[in-house]
Structures are given as structure tokens and as C-alpha cells.
Length: 104
Image (tube, rainbow, N blue to C red; front, side, top):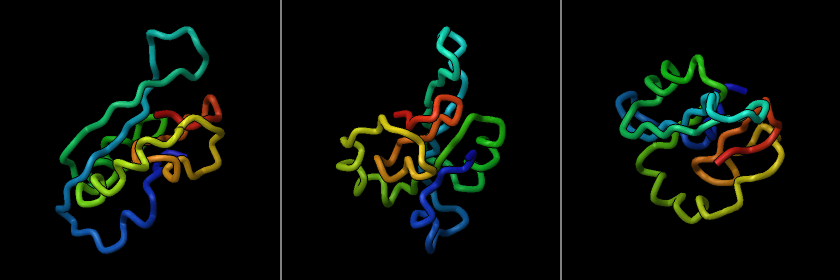
């Protein structure tokens, strides 16, 4: 699953609304199969996040207005199996399909 944005985060957003994109890219420094590195990119629009995430292992976008509310969720354990809803484990969790688990 490439775009892992929480559907609730897209409700009532404006086209130019800014947020943070979290992009999962291959970790070429690791020998582990499917290893990935998560790269955040702040202050981008949702459409820019989609464009940037097209060739990644996975990505998600969180609007700036929700990011502060989700700081508490960020403390939750992001490690766990992918079930298509890693976003429920914290605002910067992304599913690494190659390894079958959520990545923080």
C-alpha cells in the first residue's frame, strides 16, 4: 500500500494546506531484506506528498493542524504487523510491505 494517509486527515482540507509527509525509502546501507529509512518532509501540501511519494516504498501525510494533537500518539509503539492501518499506531508510522511490519 503506497499512500497510507489516514482518511480522517483528508476531511475538509484545503488544496494549499500544509502538513508533513513521511516517506519510506530503501535503506541501501542495510543488509536486511526490505530495510527502509523513513524521511520526513515538512510543510508540503497533500498533492505534493502524493507526487513525491509515487516511487517510494510507502508514504503518508499529516496536516500541520493535526500534528500537535497527534504528538501523544507518536509515543505509542509503532512496531507491529502491517494491517493496512499503521497510521493508527502513531502519526509518523508507515507500513513496510517488504517486511510486513509498521516502521517508525
